[in-house]
Image (cartoon, rainbow over all chains, first blue to last red; front, top):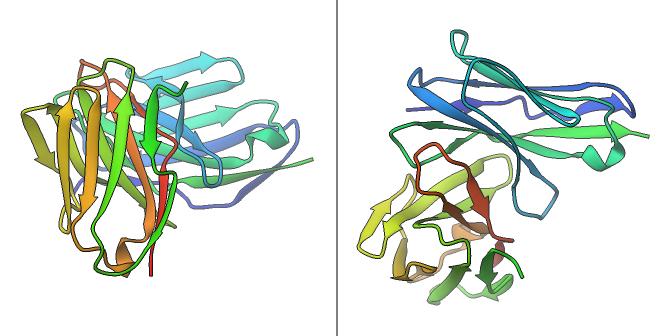
Length: 111
Length: 113
């Protein structure tokens, strides 16, 4: 069974610090990787996606992918209290239109 | 207006009742999905559809059925609701190409007593 693993947290960081969120996946055929942010009781919101090994930056967010080690990470620079949320990692094969979600990591940014 | 609209947003009902959750989208996407989310378990796929004639079961389809009435509409039914179907339900849409991200509606909070 294909799995996506995340540490449930909470990951607590002070305001202004870098938050590092990690995700591992079991299926070596995975090709597409997504990070969603979900505030409590709200819907998941796409914040980053990455398809190739290496880093992809978008504002304060950087996604990092290492297919050989089967992990994907999300870095949040200059963390703000408004970044406090659960971050969901999702993985997909290119041949599939389905996403496999991790259970999420709860991030708490302390003022 | 939201691109993916779910109704109702909240519903409380009793065991044994039939319930329908509705989803409509204005994104023009062919692919639509229904998920449920339970605390600590992440999102689990119930059903998905690639067009009005293509319906597929997800990992937890037992106790649920779906109908794709049009490209823009995808409804989820619980034929005889039971308490362990109490959860947060999300509809999502996906683009044409495999590997594209999915976009979620605001969710329906369903409680079954």
